[in-house]
Length: 315
Image (cartoon, rainbow, N blue to C red; front, side, top):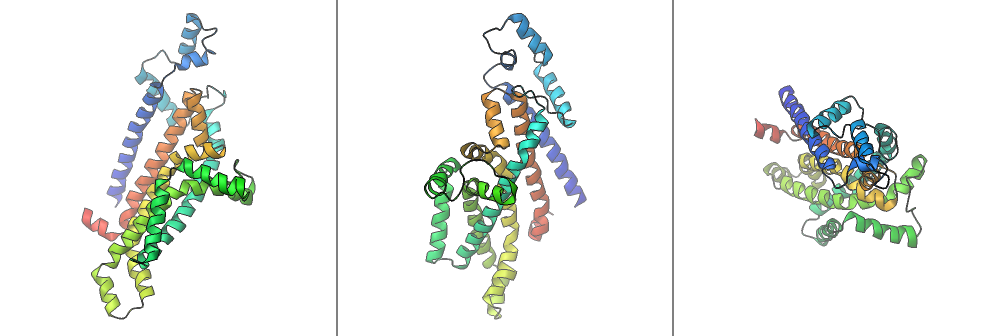
């Protein structure tokens, strides 16, 4: 187990290293010259001023040297200074990250509770109208993009019914919960569909096992069979998929936060890209990729503990 964790950690570091280079190179390959933006635009730009700005921000150095300098600073938690706000990027990210984390946590609770619940219901009531309704509803939810769901939820529950606010993140636990309900729901709809499908299929596979049939023949109550044998054996793929979906939600907050006017790292990324604020864009992208890689690695490590069959297959 220790050797396996060590291999996963080594793979995590290697993946982060490769991802960081791609992020750095991709941002600087985007249209627009950061030196022109830092110099105040093209109106009063002179070759001397442009050269001065390039030297000041090390933009005249080779890409590999710039990357090495940036990576060294990132390792020491120095993410640079924002071109637009002139503040430390770490301070900007720290101020907005809790809001995004709350949104992702709220959406995770919604898709886990509703998605797993719907999947269990469809598996228990298989080949009935309930199963068909769950499959049809989740198919519809999966086909609706998050920004379309956000617009529909705002129009119905925010504007027409007035039940929820349509912007901001609120204050205090109750206010935050009230403000983030619609954004979390629009973020969780697609994930809910995926989790319900995975839960339904995992429980169907577990219900087809020989020991389940033996328990049913032995007269064990159906409720105990579902709880002790079917659901317990299906938890491995369910929890694994929940972790993977949650890991990818950081990137999904970009659209939702923009639609609902939430000051999180998603909207910060959009603003940074629009204003060519490269240090902020690099930091937010690196944070999103790091979160995804860390969560997926943890899921990969924990999965054999949840499902011993995976451990036996790998050994």
